[in-house]
Length: 418
Image 1: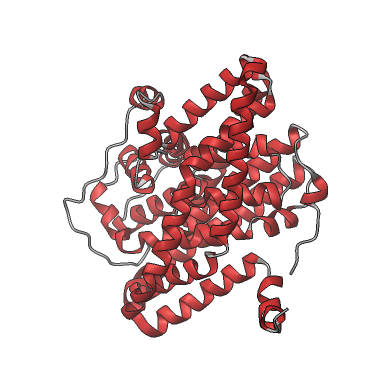
Image 2: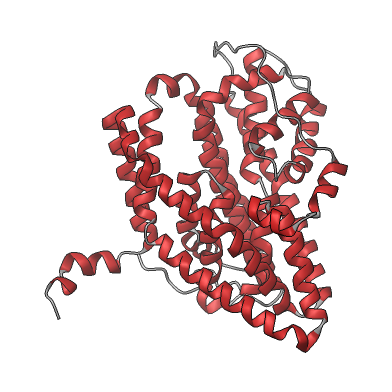
C-alpha cells in the first residue's frame, strides 16, 4: 500500500458527506466571484461540464425509472391511486406557496417607495391552451421525444410501456429485467457524476456571483429578500408541517436527506437537471422505494412549481406596488387560482417562471412590460424557486411513499453524518 492512499487529506475528503463538499464549493464560489468580479467567468466551463453531465442523465434516467417503477407496482389501480395522490398534493402545496408569496409581499411591501423604470415593448411568451397541452402529451414519435428531451411526452410513453409490460405477464419479464438493469446502471452513473458536483457548483456560483454586482442587486434587494424569506418559510412550515402532521415523520430527517439535491438545484436553477440527484436522495437518504420515487419525482419535476408560485405571488404584488396599483381581494384570489392551474399548464415550456407570471399579470390587468423590471435579477430568484420546487417534489414523494407502505423508515430515520 502506498502512503498517499491513506493520507489524512484523502481520508478526510472521503469521510466528508457529499452535501458538505457541495456547500463548500458553493461558499467558495461566492467568495471567488465577489473578489474576481466578471473575471470569475473563467470558472464557468467547469460548471457547464457538470450541468452537461447532469443533463446527460435526465432522459435515460426518467425513462428507465418510470418503466421500472410502474412494472414494480404490478397493479393498475395502485398506479392510478398514486397518480391521483401525487397530483392532488402538488396542487395543494402550490396553492399554499402562492398564498405565502402574496402574504409576504403584502406584509413587507417590497415595491413601495421604489422608483424604477422599465422599457415598453417587453414581450411575454404565450402560454399554450388546455387543448394544446392535452394533445401535446402524446408523442407522435417516441424516439423523437426521447431525442429532444420532451419530459411530458417521455412520461406518457414510459407509463404506457410500463403498463403494457405488466399486462403481458411473463412474456414481458425479459424486457423488465433489461430496464431494471439499465436503471441500476443509471443510478451508478449518477453517483459518479455527483462526485464531481462540488467542483461544478463552484464554477457555476463563481460565475453568477461575479456577474451580479451590488449595483444590480441593491435597488431590488428587498424583493429578493422577500422572495427568499417566503421560500424558506414554505419549506420549513408547509413541507415540514405536512410531513409531521400527515406522515407522522420527523421533518428534520427530511431536511437533512434532501441537502444534496437542494444545493444542486440552487446552483443549477434547473428542476429537471436536479432530477438524478433528487432520485438518489429519495432512495438513499429518505428510504422511498424505486417504484414510488421513479414515478412521483419525474412527474413533479414537470408539473410541480411551488417555488415559481411563490415567485409569482411576490413579484405580482411587487409590480402592483411599484406602479401604485391597489389590488382587490378578487385580484388576490385570481392570482391564487390562476397561478395554481398555470403551474401544470406551462410546466413543459422553457422559461416557465416568466410564462406563468405573464398569465397572472394579464388576469389582474398589470402591464406585461413590467416584467422587464425583474429581468436583471431573474437568475437569482430562479435559484431560490428551483430549490423550493425540488424540495416539494421530495416531500410529496416521501408522503406518497409513506401512504403506500413503500417508505423504509429505518433509512429515513437513520442519523445523517455531520
